[in-house]
Image 1: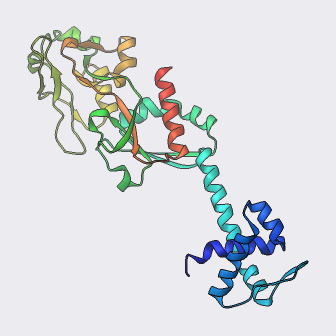
Image 2: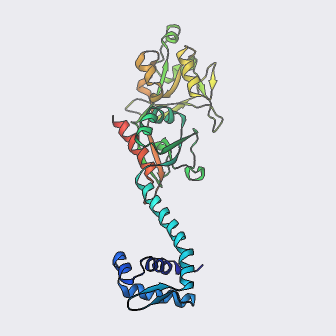
Image 3: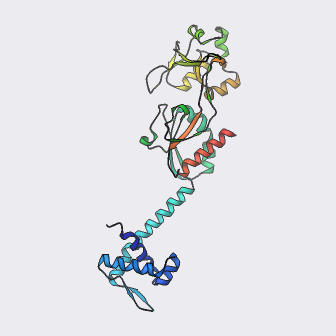
Length: 302
């Protein structure tokens, strides 16, 4: 089909619906001459006569009626689809797929699921949890949540957490049996719980920043009797007094505040940019993505 025919077909159905050039022109806000010219052009391209016109009356020819009966429903479907798209742009609805790390999902999204559902009952959320840095476009995700240092430059990124610090901590029971480390080099004589990355297969080094004025970043390889690739298992081991852990402060906060874990080496803690929600750069961000961003930013400030 010649795409150039679509505007003329739309004007034809508009004229045929009103059976009057004057009424059709007034409703559309165009001149009668413009409508007449559009109809003449369509009749010439199709090589058929579509309307009978007199000074007082207008009627469809047999070909015109057949064309109207075929085209009008199709244009109605297009019009409804455009209205639905416009409505979707204003009211968050449909499936929202978020690629996120496990930590961000547990501490930044899951606590607010009920509030998200209350505000946007037509929204369906899918969390795709993976600690690897993923390509959200290739995965078909609408947005992602990762630490700020990991983001690609072409993404729109909004901070949803304060800066993150890596905290070394152990239980009171552990420190009853072991001395408190004063520097990272003291960790060589401690049982350190290791975390194996599912992305690389390597055990994470414990990262530190030396105190001022000669600040520099370095890492220490943890040595101990327990290794896991699960955050919860690592924290649980520390709570049981198995050994020390290094993890994000956001994941340890409730245990630090309750006293079940005691932070050490705080002067050596390495700060990181906080978590960001990010999406592909585009002129019109979907309402469902904007809704989640607004909620997470609001909860960060609460």
